[in-house]
Image (cartoon, rainbow, N blue to C red; front, top):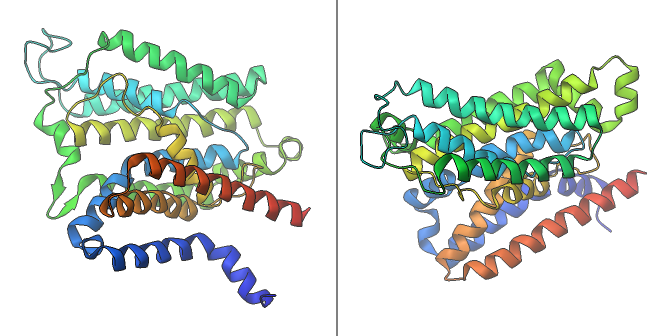
Length: 324
């Protein structure tokens, strides 16, 4: 038996220890793993689904789920990209002059927040399960993305839009955006009434109502914030890739859920941290990057990722059972 203090330490920091262990193993097996360019590449790859995982953390803490964020990213990105195209033959709005970059940015954020708020309103006022509400939104929004773009990619973006995916010195801008969102999300979750209400709703929704929390309003805000971050991830995606297609981010919602779950956010509600979501996203990125460097196929990476998710949920259930 492990001493209680060691047991508590491993329970609290287990996922961080796993991340460190993975980094050590990959660094030994592949000298290129710890190169500056590869480390920055890992962080840059983490940015998109890491931003989505931060919004998902709020949702899962509130004992919900959002399956629509991948589709929301695609639709938000298409709208933003269509407003940030240079004059070209294939431009979606051929007669529209080049707009200031703030307009497509605000459009992408607004679309994301609106889709999220609709999810929240459906869940709060119709009482249908979050799984069903967001599954429906996932399908509907993907359909809107296909209709809006005529099922074609939107490319030829302005330099100012592509700049979102560029660098400041050696540091990719997506990493800077991601770390800024980590900071904002931490403050929201830990230092504001909104964050306290999120934990209260996930912990015991009835008790939250009795204590005066406006549950309906807060659920709309929680899902709206998740959608807003999906819209922000869309802008990062557009800037990095230089194009958005209607099938973009297919499966990204599962990666965001996986990162949040691996990071220790409980699907039973009321438990989760921003630091955990950050580490969970890094675990996935490090695993994918390290296995790619070692020559593993993408298919085997999927198998391992699935096993890690199931393992994280089993550990979470066992912890909750012991507490009960």
